[in-house]
Structure formats: structure tokens, C-alpha cells
Length: 163
Image (cartoon, rainbow, N blue to C red; front, side, top):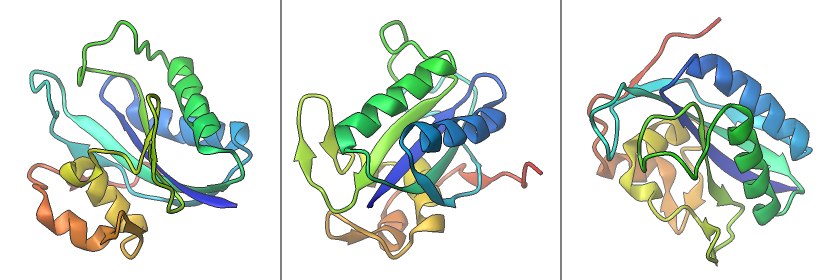
């Protein structure tokens, strides 16, 4: 089984409920086991700043699904929740954004998929929840818990439990 790290984000609709449903759907479609899930974090918009704040989280799963097939599943799940990548504004509002951050220690650079995620170490909204669940995981030779100390975490705060 491979260990995959997935970032979840969104700022349209009931994002926290979407995360719960999307996580279950990812695990079902990828025949995966959920290993860990971070808290939900409210984060300032990134890129296009004139929009509502985002909610972000990360999950760790174990799966035998190959990375390209897993990415296809993530895109299918996004579409289930109303995302239309062809018609959206880059870094704009969205119901659900799913990014494959890492897949074991695989390094991959294809037109459709780069692993680890090429902007991982620039994004506090990914590193903060990731450091919560896998602080000692090394990605591209860097420990996640250490990498988070080198990015801005301004405005990122955990949300109370949704229970």
C-alpha cells in the first residue's frame, strides 16, 4: 500500500460537510483507508484575494491505486461537488479543490501530475494542516514540521470541531 497525502480546500457552500463527504468518496473510489485527517482551518484567499476565506484540511490515506489514477479520482470527486476546472478562475472561488501532495517518496514530472506538489513548500494553508497529521514525514528531503516554520501562516487558524 502506498501512503498518499491529499489537500482539501474550498470556499463555496458548506465546505466542511463537503470535506466529510469527499473524503468518504475518495476512500471508496480509491479503495483506500483513511489514516489521518487534520482539523479544518480557515485561511485567507491565495492568489485571487477578493473572495471569501477558504477552509483547508489534509488527509493521509493508504491505497494501491496508482498516482495518475488517484489524481483522476480526485478530479471526479471535485466534479461531483460542482467544480468545473474548465470554466473557473485560477485561484478563484470553488466548492472543492483536491490536490495530490505526495505519494510515498515518488518523484514524478508529467504534463498532468507533478509529485511532490510543486508549490507545497510555498503554501501555509497546506503545510499547517499537513504538519498536524504528519509532522515527521519527509517530502523532497524536507520534514513537514520543519518546512511549515519557513512559510507565512498569517490568518490561518483551526476551526472548532464540526461535531
